[in-house]
Image (cartoon, rainbow, N blue to C red; front, side):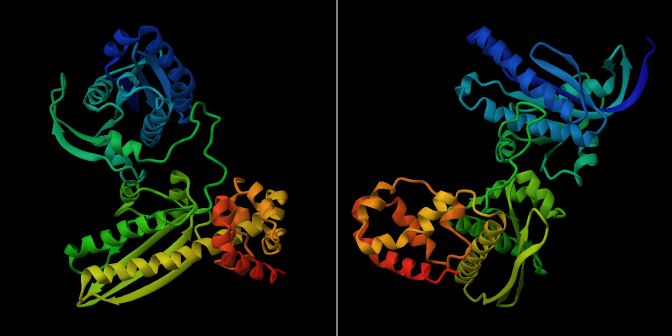
Length: 415
């Protein structure tokens, strides 16, 4: 068969420390590796329009028509392996090293050859276990298309390659900070249909001041706001390290929502002039891209620490309210999924007033879904006491009677 040439993204992967793993548990390591290939690697590569060129004992060589698909596939493979090997002790885990290059290849009998393949194999050797190495050609193609942040290692001299190759790496800890791809074993698996109701990412605030040294002020607000929002009961807040991978990049709230599995994106800007600070903030629905809420805060910066605390406190309080309001609107649209639980919380609260303590103690261990604990028509502050009482041990009921009476009086105003 005559050989042909084509441009391709080449992915090379192997198992880090394979000989040691086989020496410790030959059969177990082999069986797990084959399961990973069958359930994860082959389906995931196919899902991203790639093909496995060949398996190499402890690794594989694959090609993709799109370099974006190749990198996205590599990241998803590495993230999925963390979940698949979570129950295995650290020194027995199978962890891949992955290298990706973009180059012209010779295709012959379904195999591929050439300098582009050799560079991909050498990049793989430079990758740390669980990490990914890419060439500058790959990085140039993806840097404005994918939001993963690769670290520039500069030009490297790699084995059997005459020229220097500029190398970029995505480290294992950066992969681990990405959200789980829960249940990634096959191409039919998709991310959950609905993100958690109070799930949010706080994107790095933009520094609009003329002084670049004020960047720390904007980053400090981002960090503190992430921490404060994490304290809201029932909230799911994306970690700071993951959020900062989006810093300085064009923001598409819907794309971020899909990548992180969240419902809300919080973005904002900080402008400092003299002794004044102005913070603009927007809460965006990651499903529709629409603004849920926006506000502006001004404060005196004579005392920087106190000013930052004031801004954070006001933002967190406002966001707490807006998140729950929007969650309530969503719940009302989606309707209640559990009529019996709804009756439990909405139809019976006034039994507290007539001394039926045994009724509630029997139900004190029941777990109620958020859409019942926070019904859209419950005035803010009413649901919290009842939901806490429902979970409280029996010796707490007497101390909470005042909250219950308040909640029940509010319940009587429902339409």
